[in-house]
Length: 121
Length: 112
Image 1 (cartoon, one colour):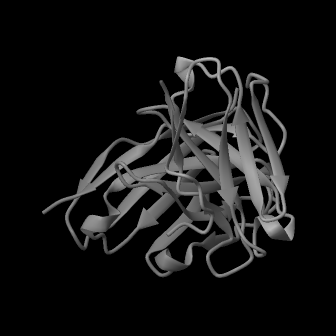
Image 2 (cartoon, each protein chain N blue to C red; image 1 turned 45 degrees about the horizontal axis):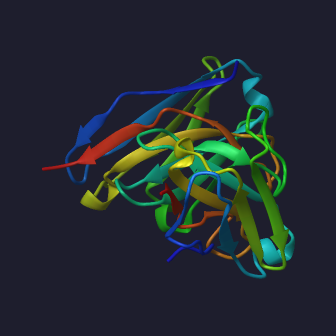
């Protein structure tokens, strides 16, 4: 079955960078997209961006432009999300999810288990 | 402020029917884009509940249903159960600068 397994929790200092991985299995990696969503503890879901694995194109949320980069490694069917210049407001659980196709109207399913990133001095 | 507006909470007794609204605009739901719903049980990752406005993934009970009209969409839960206590989020495509994908702010369902 399709599975997305994310890397473990991270603690970073303000100004640092974090790179979260999302290892996929159970499907043809290049036929779908991967999206990243974050959730500040106790708050709602915030869409961060996505990568079309077939052609490598990315699309990021406007408020994260310039700080976020999404990449993939086709050899290991793994997606990565790097966020730079971290601030306390970036403390959140970060989720990856499979985009059910390569269309703008596709849903996200399944999701990874989430990775808690804590920004603390 | 979310682009898609949901009520913060709804509640109902076991067995009752509750509905959750998701109000958008002409740049998302009103433009005809599909709406998806996710259920997030406490301490877990979100799970797809309804896709393409009205369809249920395999394994989702038919107590859950989705609909859309104009610039709004709705999720209905019939025969409410204790296990339905969760946060529910709507999501759609948005053609404005907010997008391209946006979520509602989430609705907490409480079973009384």
